[in-house]
Each structure stands twice: as C-alpha cells, then as structure tokens.
Length: 468
Ligand code: GAP
Image 1 (cartoon, rainbow, N blue to C red):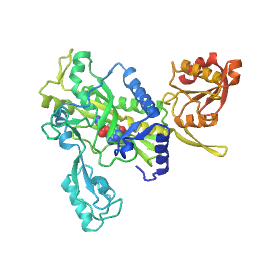
Image 2 (cartoon, rainbow, N blue to C red):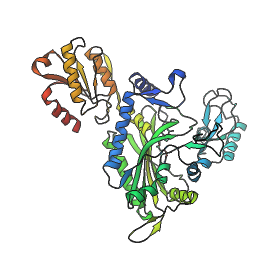
Image 3 (tube, rainbow, N blue to C red):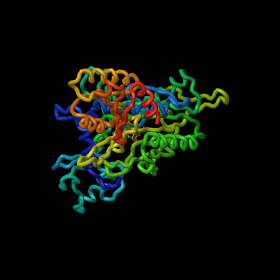
Image 4 (cartoon, rainbow, N blue to C red):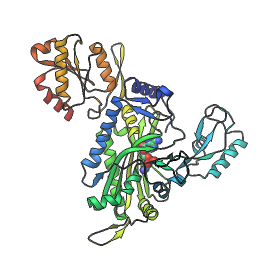
C-alpha cells in the first residue's frame, strides 16, 4: 500500500456512515468494543445487495456451483486438521509506555526487514539487533521500551456445550476463522445428496472471527466479519484452466458492479503456503486508506484440505469417477472475499463531493442495483393531508417492487441532500399539481435533473431506469 493516506476521506466516510445509519461502532453506550461494528438500516441493505450480487453471479447464474449455510461452531478437530490451532497466529509486540500493540513482522518491515514467514526466534533476533543499535522504537510514541515478540493466536474461543467457564484445551470450541472450513466438511454430504460431478463448487456467505492484533481502518480489518467464499472441487489436470476461468469471472464481477478497471489490480503471491500452487489477490485502490489493498483472494489449494480432514476424521473423502472408476481426493481452488471489506470498497468508490452553487453536495454514487434505497417518495408539504395521502399511496405501490422510503422531514432541498448521502438514485415528489394532473416530479441523483412523469407511467419509467 502506498503511504499517501488521506485520513480526511476515511474520517468523512466513517462520519457519514454513523450520521446516516450505515455503520455504527458496536456497544457504543458501553464505550464500544474494539474492531467490532454494527450495521444500521442502510448499511444492512447495502451489504445485502452486495451479497445478493455475489450470490447471483456465483450460484444463481451457474449450474456448477451450489450453496451452503454451515454452522459457525464446528467440531474442534476441524481446526487442528486445518492447521489453524497450531499455526494461525501472528507475532505480537507491545509498547510498555503507550500500551499500543503491533504486529512484530509489520514493525520489522518498517526497518526494511522481511519477516512475514520468519520464526519467533528469528523475529526476536532481528528485534534484538535493532535494540542493540538503539534503532528499535515504538512507531506510536517513540519509546524504546518494547516487549519481546510473542505468538498471539488469531483463533477466537468459546465454551459452547461445556458446563465450565474455563477454556481448557479439552473443552474449547472455536468460532470459525474462515467460512471455507464448513464447505470442506460438507463436501461429502453435498456429493452424496446432490450427485455433483467434478468440477463443481460449493459457496457460502457467513460470519468469521479472528482475534486480529491490529484492527484499525474502520471495517477493513475487524474481529468479526463476513466472508463470501467458494470452493471449486476439480481434478488436478483441470486446475490451470479453471484457475484462469475464475480469475476472469471474479475480475469481471467488480467491473459489472461499477468498480472502474483502473481502481483494481492483481497481486501475485510469491510466498505460498506449502500446499498451494498459486495465489492471487484482487486489490482495490482505496482513497480512504491511501492506496491499493486486498479485497479478495483466489487460491489454488491442492488436495491438502480434504486430505487433512480425511486423515483426522477417518472418513474416506475420495471422489469416485463413475465412468472411469478413478478414485482420488479432489483438488480445490477457492475464491474468498470479505463482504464488509467490499462494503468499504463500494462506500469508498461511491463517495463524492460536488460544488453546487455555494454548497458542497455529498453524494454516494452507488450503482443503482446496489443502492440501499431505490426510490424516495416525498409529499411536498407534511402538513397537507391530501399530499401526504397521495404520497403514501404511491410509496406503498412502488414498495411492492423496490426498496423505497417515505420522507416528509424538512424542506425538499434538505430531503434531496439526505437522499444523496444515502445514495438514493431517484426521488419522487407529490405536489399540488399532482392532485390536478396526475404527474409527479422525479429527480435524478446524479444529474439532479427533474422530470415530470405521469403516475400511470411510473412503473414503466422505473423499470426502464433500473434495467440499465
Ligand atoms: N479461506 C481463505 C481466507 O480466508 P484470507 O485471505 O485470510 O483467506 C479472505 O481472507 C478475505 O477475507 C480477505 O481478502 C478479506 O477480504 C477478508 N478478511 C480477512 N480477514 C478479515 C478481517 N479481519 N476483517 C475483514 N475482512 C477480512
């Protein structure tokens, strides 16, 4: 990521999210809970629309991918088999003065030392060398009083089903750190019940939990988040072709959802997990975060996952080809995206400020199909029952097909500004002329143009607008 971070854009987005009911800090009345967020009315609608767009392209429009909704809690051995219990951790270092906590490998990186895959001993050796040269300093307060690095597990524990509060190794269960674990465990049931033939995918959207050491940057990195993952099961000989196919499908999804091509790029991982043969990320150029950062990973994972689960469960997870009789553990390639991180991407991309007369108009230019509210309906005046009645009737009619909002708060100018900040593509005003001529004023979010449209033609009008 580049370091031309513009904190003001991030602050403006965070402030808009709270002011307009997209995202709130969780448990705020108790002082908040670090790196956990709640989604308000518009945030929930936006998140659902992003999820639905993903689901449509990944499942609805494909006959080779099926859906799943697996549980957050899984048998604890799942995470031993996957390597998470032993190895899903980050090296952590604390400043004894300002009490800030850092990832030791990130701190070393700021000294030009690459320690991404280094052991704890190697990391502490590097830190000690810097200490000896009096170079090691807290990036926050400048103190030299830093702890040694220690390993910090990212797994979140719970005691579900256990009568004791103590989280001992024998009674602990984990909140899943990624959703794909549930897909591996339901691979066999899916094949047995749906009779899918290779290659095929299983996809799901759901919560994941990670005890991230450093969880800043608003909803970019949080401790509770949602993933949209798809695992594609295939023969090893198919991997190259299908990997390229899914790279293209995922890239095009961003373009189809209004992300400009010059705002995304590929990042190829050089250092791969021992079982992986290829890993690319899609990076988005966040103006709020100062540059490109990961929103999605596309990974060729070999047959490691199913092999491990077969070994630890003792269940045969081989695929048997009905025609050739071949028996083998399928290989897997996955697409793994963060839903909340995507929401930040769409907020970042949509956020714009325009000078209108002497004012600055803030407008969220979401693609129409993602906008939380599609149409807002206003009576010109809230104290005129005949206008309110007509506007309410219209609202109920349009709400049958579109997520709408009835708004009679403040003057029309204020209502337009509010709907601009929510990103509502169209506002419809019922005025006194409406009662005479059956026409309403439709105002376009992006052009601010106002058109008179007959109520009897509104359905066709919006059908046309929303099909573009
Ligand atoms: N199954 C593979 C996997 O989980 P990952 O790169 O760890 O891979 C995939 O995560 C995606 O999940 C990331 O690209 C990101 O969008 C999202 N993600 C990961 N950790 C996150 C966190 N702490 N907060 C928000 N999103 C996160």
